[in-house]
Length: 226
Image 1 (cartoon, rainbow, N blue to C red):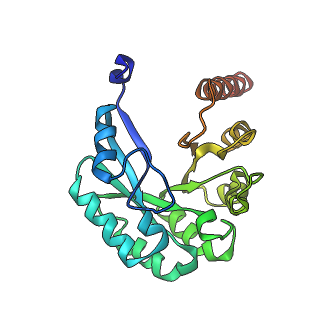
Image 2: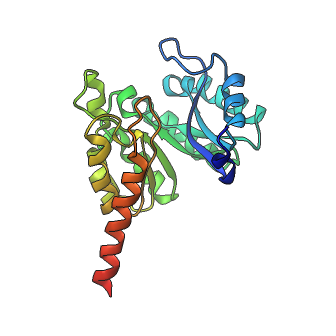
């Protein structure tokens, strides 16, 4: 392990656990994934369960089981499914205050519902009222998988303007190609927006480019205020 890693307290804020037939992961089981995290000096991790993206009761049960098994190391996102909005919103209301749950995961592409659709309205209101962290899948819509059109990061602009109480994380920071850099413009607009770089495409110097551009932007703001 790189000695530099040991200098930081690393928190993995975007982890998937649970079996998923067509989704290839680094290791075959949850235990092996946890082993990799600990070997790379990850101190805590926040996961969503694949089962919770597809089901309500079973997914919730599996999420609780894993969170309890790795208590203190793993924390969980509850999942909001807009296709069963009333049922999943009730789960959020009943359970979000529990210590093992730290936020909500949404996946517009998986559920094939645009984030501005009325099916999401009650969820955004709930998340805003309770100042919740929301992790959303985001991706470049100009790819072969046409379902990614539901997760275009720029679809969240009006939501961020309206619901200032939420803290939104754009998972994958746009996901592919030029969208990895286009997303920087959104970070400049919204104080309650964050990104992560999880994914299977690694661009050299991407993190450094983000830090430099945002730092230069903030410096310009400070100069204008002075």
